[in-house]
Length: 221
Length: 396
Image 1 (cartoon, each protein chain N blue to C red):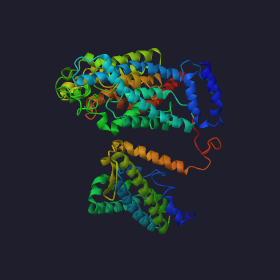
Image 2: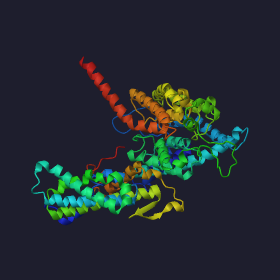
Image 3: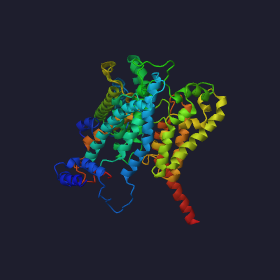
């Protein structure tokens, strides 16, 4: 993958190949743990930590891991780091641990981590693998935190961050729309976020549908 | 008449391609076709000629909803007057109060929903569709009379945008837009959409209420009963079968009267708009499951299980949903066999949700929406089975 400069590797995870909004992997934790910004950010950081550690180890060992058994080895590496992260959160952030619950151990099966191990770290040198983990991890944190913030704002009238509630509009008479902190709200908000990103990243020339109908699906009128 | 037609001809060039008001073409088109018969014909190879176009169809539905709307005026006022201790309320006074509840909700629905309709029509460059006339009339009728107006506006905005326009507008929607709007409010503002306090237009802080006022709907009364005789409990609460049938009970504004829904059903079936298969299917499904539950009732403390099947038809939103919501030609199944399956499953689900699920006393809205989602799948399998059957006949 020499065509990627290091800068490209770092930035593509942020927007162009954002894991949640473009690649649409890691949707399970993104939907399940984003009912408020605080939990969402915690989940994002935990996932990024595991991703970074597993990318490093898998990249370093890529030369002597046999091709045939690479997936089980990836899983063992990832689950080791997840266990470490699980204990760390349990020790230092007990409230986050309580609210994320089963979704911390479930980071093991997060597609982003196994996907990057298989698609990138097992084929690339150490430095690009670290940059890839940082880019993808930041992209995941951004997407899930924005999702959590929107849902919390609409569904509870507040935004919380790092364990503190920054403001709450309920005192000012805001009536929270409960749907948005329930599961359907996650799907609706994520749908709008994906639609927004699609609108921003669509190819040039698609604005005029009559001129170039081939790059977009024409409206069925 | 000639004068207006001339006026339209005069301003038309402004709205056509290249005109200064080109962007507002859908608005012009809608106003013109509302007043005059359109001279436009279908573009493309196929052309279906029928006197029954979307606008006539929608007008018929509006006509069929009129009995429900009148009952809505009367009953909404009546419930308020009875709750505040008026012994013999006059019909006119009750209808006046009801109209004062219905029209603000209706107007805010038209404004908020119409805004999105026009916006999407202009951006997407398609015509404004008459379908919204029906949605906007049905929506206020399935709301509780105490609902704040801003919530109705948010609800219909969600129903029009998420329920209809994101799928491509009228004819493309998977779910019924009016029910999508209601289910959004149901889960978003549950304290304004469920419970015992929202179904009668009274303010417990200001109004002087009669002794023993409860405000519970018949379904809530029936669901709260444990072990005993559920029909006796309903009668004790004042809900006799005739009252339930005529709709003189607390509930959503226009859904209470089974009689008014029956008149609407006759109109819709007579002009051939709504499917009798769907309606009969709903009734059949509900009858079979509630009768089966009646046999299970002695072994359970759940009193709802012992409710006779004919009570299910007149309680909650069953009649209104069966006649006006389940039969929505866009979101229901389209094949004849599919309509039977679709209708029967709605009936089955309603009774199951009402009797077995302790969280929701009423299940009509949820049952219809769930089956809306399954309708294309039902149609798919009906068509597949038909193809298979024909192939078999051809090879024999």
